[in-house]
Image (tube, rainbow, N blue to C red; front, side, top):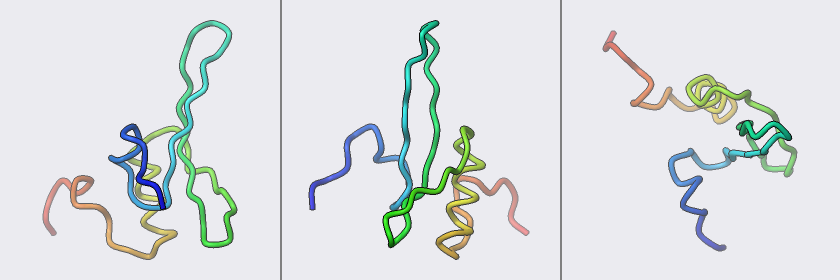
Length: 71
């Protein structure tokens, strides 16, 4: 298996970033989750919200960098 591109190394396993340049020059960024069957599920365009949705799909605890206070 080849290593992830340097652009996507900040993302959790199974989560991918897509970038598209629009005609007006703006860059659109979207995040996707690829499940075991290979189906891609859109997570949105906000990185923090996408990581929270990813944690729900993986049934894991919320990533430490997203928590602001200890409860």
